[in-house]
Image 1 (tube, rainbow, N blue to C red):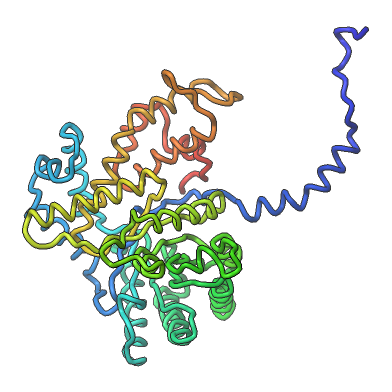
Image 2 (image 1 turned 135 degrees about the vertical axis):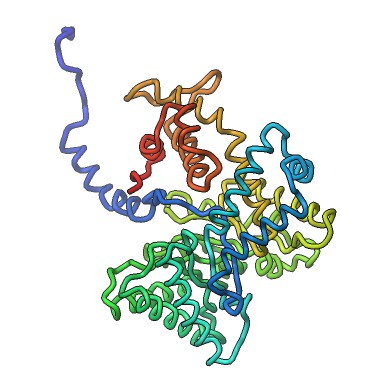
Length: 436
């Protein structure tokens, strides 16, 4: 008979536990290396692509001005925009006012100066000059605070035909940016590697950046890059193996994002031009593979773009806006929180879609987090009403609110007033490091 005061009995000794821990130590290290989790930094809601020869000191301001002009011409008030997009009237005014303020304050969150498809083949002297000019303009913009939060270049890919040209442009740009910045690169610098087909090309890009760091006395790993998924080989290799995860691993910790290329990928799958779109089944398949491969790695996802431009008469602009708005909302619902914008007229609907998405769920997310946090430490879930939330869902709810705060869709006072939680508490629930 066991007395009540006796300690609980076990059958597995400490030596066994130690042996199991030793056997799994390599697995523990591999999990930590491959799946470090979200980096906890702001993710832009879009990337704007501008050909290198069209980029100037006023480009970002001009995009904002043209976007506001489009609103003035085709949606001069909230009611018109609501009718055009199918927005619910009560929420439309708040979204509309915030969109206008965003376009005036920060019209572009992420800028990519394009030396690839948007720029095309040029004489070497011309591209050399453009790469240096882009670096100088960007360095000046970061220095005076007029640059978007994130900006950089997309050079040509590492396929044989354009490899040397792409490497030279990347080198010229980075060297001049470093020189113009007094030996320091801007924190918001982003580089994009297009048309990747084999993991070895990703390894080569990582090696190039490592050589640049060593040559200039920069910390190892200072430079990261996005991988564009726009070839079929990037999704499924010739050997039948899924390729995206291998590419992330080939980057050696330098991969920051996976960007889906709508039209190159669609064309590679023989989709006719009229049917090439972000919501085509081939796009959904590729993006689902990207999503699973990137989960937990800290590598962010970006959807592609639409080539239907909101230009012409009001009826034509509204039709293009409805299409773009619907595609962005579709991406957001599928956890693709970033996409490409190719024209200033896309900015009103980019922000309208993001802001409506963030604001529509504000009350529910805050209520659920307030109930979850109110349970106190040590619980494994809580919720509001008929919803029982787990820690993973609390992370998702916090991330949802933080994305809204980062882009200006919601204010901290709104979130704190509804949830009782401040920014630091949301960061903690989302697993982010507190912002400095």
